[in-house]
Image (cartoon, rainbow, N blue to C red; front, side, top):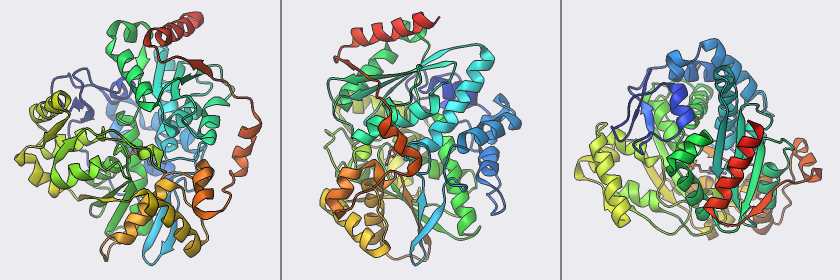
Amino acid sequence: MKYVSTRGQSEPVSFVDACLTGLAPDGGLYVPEAWPQIEPARPDETYVDVATRVLSTFAGESLSEEDVRGLCERAYGTFSHHSVTPLSQCGPNTFIMELHHGPTLAFKDVAMQFIGQLYDLVLGRRGQRMSVVCATSGDTGGAAAAAFAGASSVDLFILHPHERVSPVQRLFMTTTGADNIHNLAVTGDFDDCQSLVKAMFADKAFAAEVSLSGVNSINWARIAAQAVYYATAQAAIGPNRPIRFVVPSGNMGDAFAGYVAARCGLLAGFELVCAVNENKTLATLLSDGLMQREQAVATPSPAMDISVPSNFERLLFEVSGRDGDTVRRTYDQYRQSGSTILPESVRGPLGCTGFSSAVIDNGATLEEMREFKQQTGELICPHTAVGTAAERRLPKTDATTVILSTAHAAKFPETVLEATGDEASLPKRCTELLERGEVFDRVENDLKLIKDRIRGQVTAEA
Ligand SMILES: *Cc1c(COP(=O)(O)O)cnc(C)c1O
């Protein structure tokens, strides 16, 4: 199976190359050339069984099924729950899917653990070394650090905004003790970190010199790995039962994975509500077809403080009838003017995809954390609360509702304390984090300095 670019001007590539590259050379995102049909998950299959079937289908001829099984066994063996992404009931016909049992307590681990194993296997076989660079507002950096710590073929450079990530988030990045993980605390905000990373990729000579690679939310491997838990949720609820998924959303990687699961025949139907915080560009996009750049504002759910979601491009490609020209024109116009109305020809189909959205403001998010605690005795993280608050406001349905819990409450103890008055304590397996020494370097927001550091690191090891 080959992967094509959403902007239609790059050569098709294999699964492995799509995952190692991230962005296509024409600036588009990779998608399978056609949606494969995959047998739905069965209740007697383990998570690793389902992940192996789904991911070896996406890998096509670029990896053997045996290779993929090995990757999945190692990736999901790090989760603290034997079901990997268990469901727990929180109301009549309503469930929470817990995606936070990985090493860094957020759903990013589900895909990142797989990616770490994938890079290790493929680069090891090719005798190649890569520099993975990522900008993080909190969760991605930790998940990447846990996934690549000790990997012999990868140097990971994490750029986080100095003093703007929560202490627990920072500990997950800075205490791995692995000498291939390099933490750079940048004087600036998340947008500054992201601009630095984009500029590094745009410098083709530099990118080639250090074998630059990216694992941000547009990497196809992340979408593919996330499609698996939608399939296991369907198996757990019952093969023919319609499910309404409610997904706390930022860049829409998690939500788009649900769409992928549906297109590949893994779901009985497809209804998905993207729950967003006060950064509601995604909601405007889905309801009015207006794509508008807006300054992201800080909320209690920082991992969702995103303006235009990067994975929307994949959905636009689908609803345009896989027309790279429409996608390219739309993004060109958006880049030039900061805003564009989607063409009439795609707005109709967009309304029929099964996607909708709900907006939850900051006050309602904290109120929900309190109310959820009162009703169930459980603490939830502020991102998950955006999802459960959205669910309360949805019209009643006969479908079973599954809300995705995207992080553990203990990852955001300050907000949990403010909302509920309770201390959210870290699970025992994470408490040694607090005792280990942190390693990170303060750097100025200066592209040349940071590139020199990366170069220096890479040549020192060559
Ligand atoms: C990344 C993240 C999200 C948003 O996921 P997207 O795939 O970007 O939509 C939501 N919650 C948490 C805790 C996250 O880390």
